[in-house]
Amino acid sequence: MRVGTVPPLASAFQPRAGLREEIDRARERNATVVLTQVLSGGGEVGKSQLAAHYADRAHTEGVDVLVWVNAAETSQIITAYAEAARAVGEDAEQDAAAFLKWLAVTGRSWLVVLNDLTDLEGTGPWWPRPPAGANGRVLATTRRRDALVTGNGRARVDIGTYTTGEALAYLRDRLAKADAGHLLDDRSGDLVEALGLLPLALAHAAAYMINEDVDCATYLGLFTDRASRLERLLPTAADTDGYGRRVTASLLLALDAADHREPAGLATPAIRLAAHLDPAGHPDTLWNTQAVTHYLTTHRTTGAPDPAPVTAGQARAALRLLHHYALITHHTHDTHRAVRLHALTARAARAARETTPPTDTPATVRTAADALRNIWPEHEHTAPDLTAVLRANTDTLTDHADDHLWHPAAHPVLFTAGNSLLHAGLIGTAVTHWQHLTTDAERILGDDHPDTLTARANLAASYWQTGRTAEAIALLERVAADRERILGHDHPDTLTARGNLAASYARAGRTDGAVDLLRSVVEDQTRLLGPMHPDTVMSHVNLATVLTRRGRALLPGDPAGAWRDAAEAVRAVGPHLADDPARYGPVLASAYGLAAAVLDADGQPEAAADFRSRALQAAGTAPAPRPGDGAADGSRS
Image (tube, helix red, strand yellow):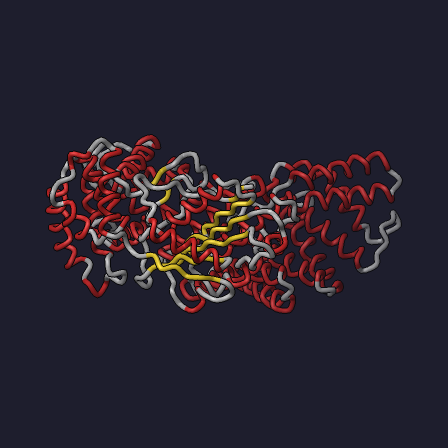
């Protein structure tokens, strides 16, 4: 059983025998090996490639369970474990916890790789426990070196840069595989030292040399000149990794060359855009979107003043160009993470003014957000893996966006991601998301902005999911009052807020308050929207449900006629609700069930059976609401 996609080994991958021996010795003593590196806070020294090597070896040796997790966000770990839980036969979403328990007791062999761990504090509960036998192993990579890395059976192995011999071997092997061995010369040793023995900088250099047919001495001259100019753009004090200038210099050299290849002028804006997304990968379908092709058209670095629109084919060609220069990897077989780039490449691309001028950042950020939203699946339950990748990319984009996703209002992808967490059952992560979103909305947009009210309503929905009932009701009361004050009593958003508040009262057992509020909502919706409007019908059904909970009999003699009216409304409007499953699907099954119950009580068994069948069908096919079109509670910004 395999979960997650192991990244492919780089061309001319160096096995680094000494390091592997150290890792193997650590594995013999401990269930968990954590790969970190000597340079605190740095990256790019080959940790993930070593982890991928071990994953490939485990696969070749026939390990029973192999789980590769891109672990920068805790939610990604939980999602991967949940997927693994389903694969080994557990139920879903206690799933992650169930999977951890299964690992601790199973006799099957397994390897879990947690790649690029960042939040060691938040991921504490999700470390696999030491297995009962000797069949299980955990391999993790991280840039951190603090005390949290070790302990609980974990051993740390420091990963440094290449040795001089390894760096020369990489350069020799890479050039030989491209039939470019003639580019090696007596300056190769000087070149690998100038590049700091860094695998990523060496990859940039080798790709440039192959594509431009320049030897080591020529590249060294170009690199030295560019690096000296970077002293102004990226001074030593700003180079927190201790080697960022080397990577930035090699990046800019490669981009200079790529920008002059066809399709000319697209390499720089393309990597600028990719650098704001998750380094672990995003779908290449993102590059087919109108948002991306328009961005590439308007930010092309060379060409006519009024260039022809960039096509999706040219956007893909730009990806392939970046791939050929080792600035990204583009592998179409990895459907959801087809486009990857190293985190340090991304950081260099964002930091260098030559690639990302500050004036271009707002457009870059909003284009990435638009493109993510464009490819978000309408029916999330049909594509959970894709949805998890899109959430991870939204998180990364948000981290690099400053406040650019909040002007002139909150970008819909922020709501999309939060609602998606709720739909996926990642409730703790959803609460954190909505707390941050609400705080940002209040700070940037103000307390009375519609997006701020929507964020509060979604925070209330997430509180409900965690049992924080009093806090949820308090927020919903505030939202309802604010919407009525700002938008007016009859505004659709005000009616929605009042309906949500009534539902919260009912769930908390405050049925009298719920009935009074729902009656007023039904009356106002009937007056404003008409008795057969879907929103009116749904409110009518909710009122009937609450009346039953309060003790009203489900019989033809019901004096209020609530059930009978609700059943008739559902019979009339149900087919229209089915035409909009994204909005009404989640409640349609319940509404059909109510209608069937009324028809049964009214002595119409054949009609009741028909609606019961419709209820079952709706329950099996209705998707969760499309996130981002409104709040999780049904309100809209």
